[in-house]
Length: 399
Image 1 (tube, one colour):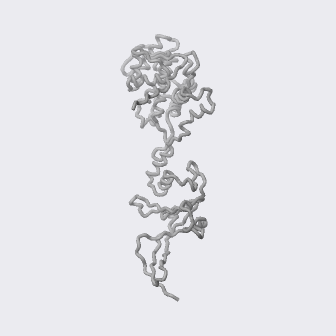
Image 2 (cartoon, one colour; image 1 turned 180 degrees about the horizontal axis):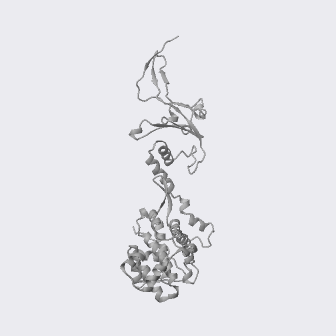
Image 3 (cartoon, helix red, strand yellow; image 1 turned 60 degrees about the horizontal axis):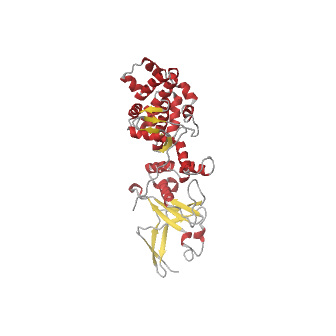
C-alpha cells in the first residue's frame, strides 16, 4: 500500500464544485464527454458582480441544448457552508495538494421553453446578449438598476405594436386601400378627434359629441363666461381667468348668434380647461389634472385621452408623452374651430397662440394637420370634405 502526503494549497483560483439535485445533465453524464462532445452541447460560464461591494458574488451557468442550470454563492437559500476539499495527485507521485472548496454550487435546472416574451434558446439559437444581461441584473443588480430595467421593459414598443394601424389596413379591417393615403389616415386617427372624411357638412367633420361626452356636457358650467360677455366689460383679471381667445370667441358668438351663446360658452369653458392644462410643465401634468377647476368627469376624460401608463421609479404612473402632446394640440385646434364657426381670423389665432405660449407658425402646423386651409395674413378655415395633408417626401441628395 502506497502512502500519499498532502499539503494544503494556497491557490487563489479555487476549483468549482457543483451538485445537481435534479439529476446530472445528459451532456455531463456521457462517458465520452470531453472526447467527442460538440462544443455547442455544453457551455459553462461563471459571472462575477462588478460592484465592489458585492465582488464576492458569483453565478454559475451550465448551458445545454435541453436545459439551463444556474447556481449562485449568495443569499440565505444558497448558503452551503462547504467543508469539502479536493485532493490533486499527479500520476506516479507520492505527494499531492489539498485544495479547499469555497462554495458548493447547487445547480437548479430549467427546461428551454418560451417564458413570457423571452426568446426560446436552441442549440442553433443561444440566449441573446440582452436577455442574458437582464438575467444578470435580476440576480446581481442593485435596486435602482432593477427599477431601470423594469421601466425599460414596460416602455419598450415592439415592431408589431408600432405597425398595428398599418397591419389593420393591410388585413382589410378598413375599406381604404393599403397605400400611402391609407397609412396617413391610420396615423391621423390616433392623433385627431374622431372625424368623418366623406361628409360635405363642415359641422359634421369633427362631431362635438365625440369630443365632449353627454355626461361632461351636462356637468359643464358656461354661465360665468356668459355673464361676463353679456356685460361686455372685460378686465385683465377676466382675461387671466378665462383666456383671451375664449373671451374673444364668446364675444363673436354673441354678435353672430345670441341665442346659442350658452352653447358656445360651455364649449369655450371646456377649451380653456385644456389650454390651462397644456401650459403646465410636462413633468407635473399628472398632478395638475387634479388641480383643474372643472368637473370630475372632465378630469377623467383628460387623464384617459392624454396620459399614458408607464413604470417610473418602480411604480405605475401616468406620464405625458410627446405623442400625447400633439394629440392635445389637435383637440384644442378643433375645439377652437368649432367655437369660431370653422373660420378663425389672424387676430384670434394670435390670441390663441399667446394663451398657449406658442409661436404662431408652430400653432399653424397643428391646424394644417387637422385639415385646415391656411390663408396668409387672413387666418385658417376648415372646408368639407376634409382633406388631410399627406407625408412630404424628402428629395434625395445628389452625390
